[in-house]
Length: 298
Image (cartoon, rainbow, N blue to C red; front, side, top):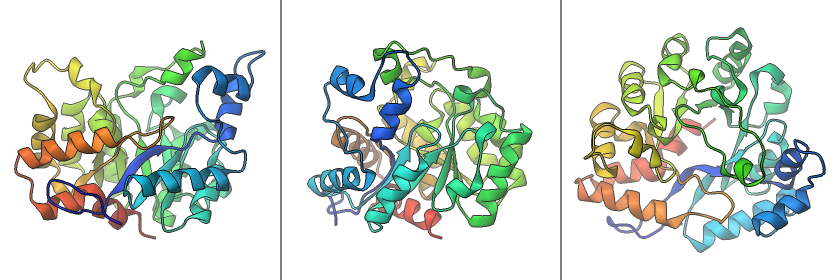
């Protein structure tokens, strides 16, 4: 399956899609007395996901078909929901990869046997990548050839704000530099830093330059650019600098799609920016899909 792009038809594999399962909403509801999953869904004005994650995966498969997207990494976005994305990937093995949020303080490797990437949110769960609790996850990734996704920079969960849930995150743990020594100690593990570092762009580039096993995902609207001192920084400049440092083979296209289906606007903005700075068709194919398929292969 291919999608039209400035280079012609291209196979797209989205490295960053949030799979907001029924269990995800139930987990949110448990954090506020009197709140229910159904009430959250009604408040957000969205269609309720099927309680069976395999059926919900069918909705996402249809969404990918509608946008001519070949594959996607589905992220279980609360700890303990890894079975949802595993079920989705099992139901559609040719379409989905199973990612899952992991809290190192509640890590159980047995729950991640069929997971393709452990997603770590240091600011959310208040830990450093150097903490002893993180080491079993790194060992798991090294032993089973799985990815480790590490969210750095600004972290804002819009749903929590809409529901009046607190977000007691701690940005002391958000700097990509915290990953440097860890990535060096585990050279066979592929580490993914989303959103170009989400505000720590310079630091993400430094990390990628020093660690060839670090990849940058391009997902979201990249609103973090408003924090940059360089007033001329735009998406074209971001891609140009990322390509200069990391190269086309270490950029992973992502949209950060979630509640409203697959975000085609992100694809259009990023493909246009890359085309305008003269990226070749071969490099575009790498960024928009081939890189993810290469590093996630078991």
